[in-house]
Length: 165
Image 1 (cartoon, rainbow, N blue to C red):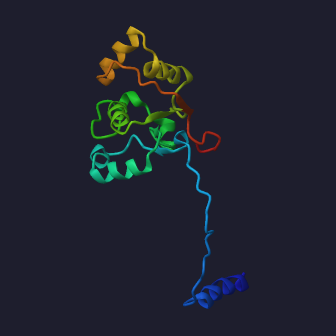
Image 2: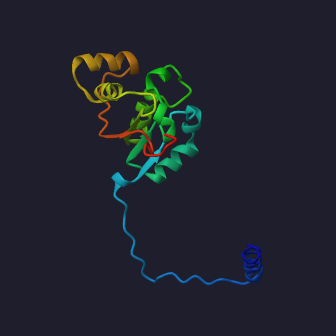
């Protein structure tokens, strides 16, 4: 163990002050990433004022994601979207609809895997996508918007194969 430590300590000292040359190809192959493969993970805990800045808008526009993953990673495993609808300082579902329209992106939803149920997740899918008068009215009451969100991408939990999920 001492020899390994000594070698790791000596190697950086030998390289100190020396230049390193990196040679890049003259004609690199550059390919575009398909828009549907470009995404951004935006947590529901995000403060609205932080994502309404010009800096954020410019950065997200440069990233040009096609999909926004919400309400985030492991946080989504136990996120109960209904409980946060009146939290206007955070990126709840109401605010997410405005976010999607502002940046012209699609929504990918991580449904509650930790303390939710399959029937709750199914009802959430219907709320977001069903165009029936019942769900239009429910969306209008809950989200102030009767239009379907039309979520095509659903994820059941985040890293749900891990013991800590």
